[in-house]
Length: 197
Image 1 (cartoon, helix red, strand yellow):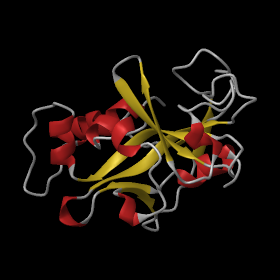
Image 2: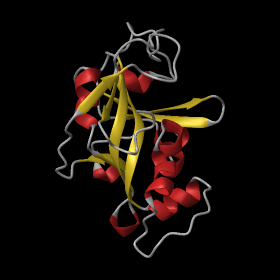
Image 3: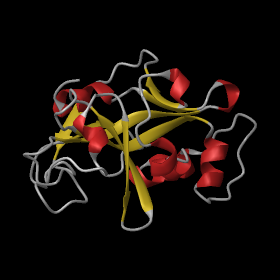
C-alpha cells in the first residue's frame, strides 16, 4: 500500500503464479507500468470511483482485471490504501513453469519437451505483452477481478523466489494516448521477454 511508482519497481523480478504444485504456471515479472489514480489522465481512476474500477481504490495487493478493445484482458495490481486510487499494470512475464499449458492457451499449437520448456523465440510469444500473459494464465475479469494477489490460497498470486532485479529501465508508457509522456514504464534491462525495449 504505497505509491504505484515504488510498487512498480518492487514488482520487477517477482513471480506471478497460477495454481499450485507441479501444474502451477509461473512467470517472472519483467515489465510493468504505473498508473497514479485521479491525477493521471490515462488511469481508469481519472474519472473517479465506479463499480468497474472499485478494486484500484484499495486496499492494495488485489487484482484489477479489465477488458480492452473488446477482446483482451489486462492484469493490474492495486497498491494504495482503501479510498485512494493507484495500480500497476503487469506488461510482460518471462515464463518459468507451465509453458506447454501457456502455449495451448495462446493457441500456438506448439509441442513442448519433457521439461515443458520451449526455445527462446517461441517462449517469447507466450507472455510478452499484457493481453498475451492474461491469455496464457487464463486471467479473466469474471474469474480474477478482486483476487488477493498476496495470498497463495487465492489461486493467482505474486511470490518472491529471491531473484534480485538489477538495471531497471524507466521509460514512457506505451499503447496509450493520454499522459503517454510520463516516465512510468519500468522493465529489466536486457531481458528478452520485455514487450518493447
